[in-house]
Image 1 (tube, one colour):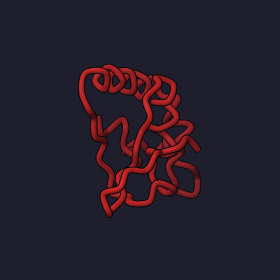
Image 2 (cartoon, rainbow, N blue to C red):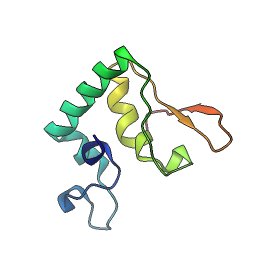
Image 3 (cartoon, rainbow, N blue to C red):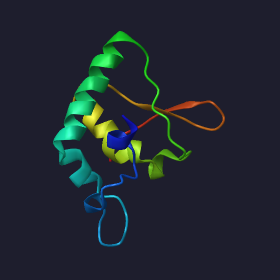
Image 4 (cartoon, rainbow, N blue to C red):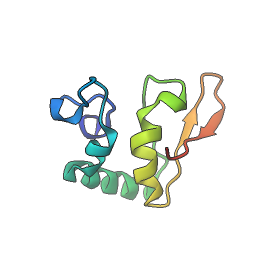
Length: 92
């Protein structure tokens, strides 16, 4: 799911002119919606971990892209900080 859920897509049309990812555009892609639905179904069956290299949730694509999409499925993300503490990922 990383190609669709990742914060740095290979599709250059999913970036703004300044080179930053366009999360709003990414979230409108049909493939993104399909993978979010698959992820939501998986989360009903087991605990799911989404890996990312960003430690700070205020800079993490999960806060801007995945969190809001999963909230629509009544799933709340928690960001695991470097000290091991869980922090809710709030939609931007």
